[in-house]
Length: 191
Image (cartoon, rainbow, N blue to C red; front, side):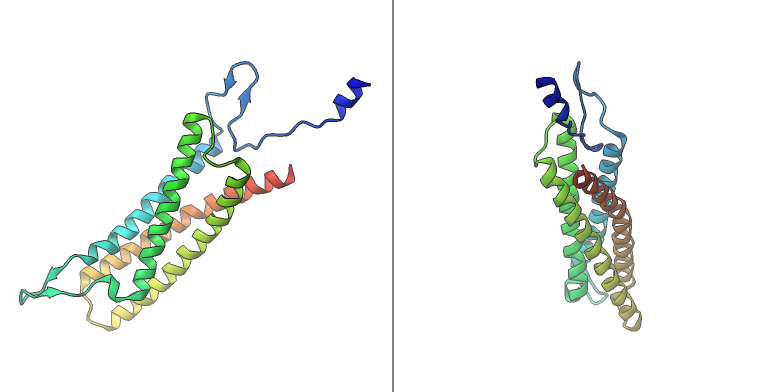
């Protein structure tokens, strides 16, 4: 009777994204390749969002005009560019958190946040980050078109275009990360 009751208990299938424990030697020495590629994508998102925010932040320096007066042309004069800067900083902070969490998970074989909560948080925030990056990029395109009609400096236009390109690159990197987090969440719900 005891053997029959033991057979009815179904084992829990581990997520392919979590580090798997070997029965004989403890933790496996190598994480799944999808885990490493997700960390690589997070690192790229970190770099691209930092470069985008940095290119806008360099506009804040006081520049001297030919008459010796400081130029007041900064990105803070444009609320749309300020929105783009804030989005880039938020995506940078989120990518830094995800990268730190991933590295800690690999190094210490533990999690800062439980697997279940982490899957839900990653899915929701990845979707949100993708949306706000596209939103800020579309707003930046409008500012670039408005600057073509005005006599804005070439260096300001170039910095804004670089920021736009880096923001779109960050979006293109966060997109597969959000797909991975959606896959991970679906696997958790199905199991």
